Length: 133
Image 1 (cartoon, rainbow, N blue to C red):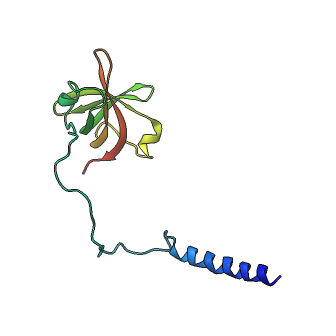
Image 2 (cartoon, rainbow, N blue to C red):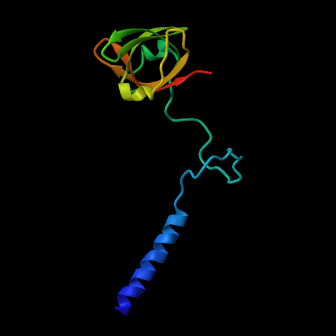
Image 3 (cartoon, rainbow, N blue to C red):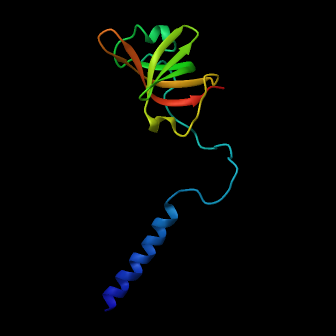
């Protein structure tokens, strides 16, 4: 009996310590500037990212793209026509990748994804849609 009481006390005390070390949101606060040093790599990228429809329309399969422009029309089944200053290209955006964003042909957006190259046609498989600033 004494052993199970000691084990229970130990378990409860360790659970409170574990709960105190877990993070999460706990009420409204304003974002304060971070005083911790941020790390990471800051330099050239080995994977080039294409930034225009013209570049994407001649790119290899799976080439990374980040395009800024407009969706000018829906062509059905999660497919759309996208336009920037250099041309137009067909894009595919899965419903889950909209993240609740609604756009019109006058809404400037940034799309991120990759080129999907078939025999003679290239489309952009979009992973992210965000509003351009």
